[in-house]
Image (tube, rainbow over all chains, first blue to last red; front, top):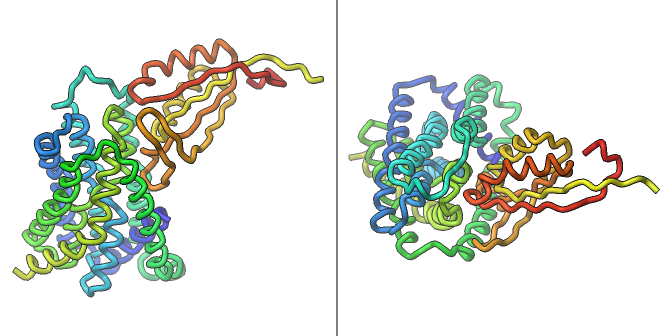
Length: 287
Length: 104
């Protein structure tokens, strides 16, 4: 189901950019997204070290998750925005793909700068890590389907539109239901999740969403795209980053970073976050 | 009755993202026969794991199972050794009887 959702959102974004053409806003949004993805992990890292009382390696791994993005949170947010008559620009899908990987690189840098070098070693080959970081499944699928949509345009998309449009919301509902079950199970099994880390897993999306909404409004994006940027900034990865961290920082606790991003931040964003970031974006874009 | 020969069976329980590395090491150890089996879930001293199919394989483990000669098995295990602690890999080795031993 996640493959379907990623392909659908990529195709639709590409088709929209094909219709609207390339605008300077695309470059501005891409730069804003890249900046967020590089800077968010740094703030998160120091908060996790001080308030969260995590060691440097675990703090780096968790911080990378919060700098990267969640595709399903974005897809749900995009549907919410469309339903409320403020759909985000199609190019935000490209911004989503761009924001997947820089946080991984920043997280690894933080781990090598502040981590205890005597504690375990990753033994990973650089090529393997680069492959996992830059060519992981979600990045390839999103970018690939975006490019296909961009080349195909509205006419080329029409024959396959019933598959990717008609069933989209139903599939999204089923996927969210499945995600809810996975999140609940992870929460039940969470051993290393402390109250302080739970608080951070809620504070991070709120603060990052506010930064994203402010930045989007500051660089002049429309309200829908500003909200989408805020949603991206607020979301935390649970697909691309965990796999890369498992390879590069095996000594980090995967139960911890997956539980924080998937079992706390993800449901928080779906239930409370998306309407809040949309409200912020609307307010900031008008102001 | 078909003639059987003793070979070594090595099973490696490994995190999904690391599988390609294990396959490469097996190839370098001249292992010809192997298979990769999915796991639904399980438990270790660190806690339980599940194949939740949404986390990019980070929380998922697979079982790499190979049958080979004693020499190849030793080379493979030696190559795995540096990874065992850092990645929490579980390795078992046992004797199995095989028919058509040239295939292993």
